Length: 92
Image: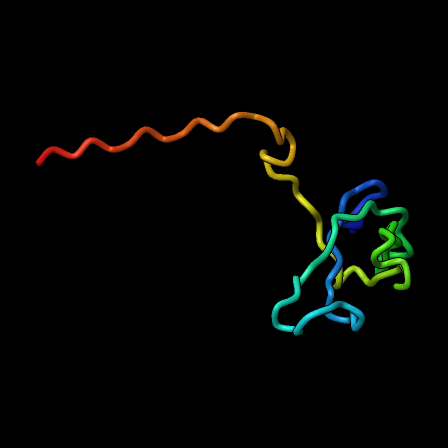
């Protein structure tokens, strides 16, 4: 079976084992990122390029704590004007 991830993919990393995040545990994001995937380590682990904020974490994570990141249309073209929906006309 082929691995689900490949080098260069953008991935989100679970914060379940991140103890150094601020705020109450309930209010934290479940996943952080996206981070670029540097390489696959066997079938069960991946190495990601972490930002400065997470530089004290080890960059290798099991695939069970990583998920693919899919960019939304708004993130792809951030300055695109949205078409406002016209108001509904209600007859009395």
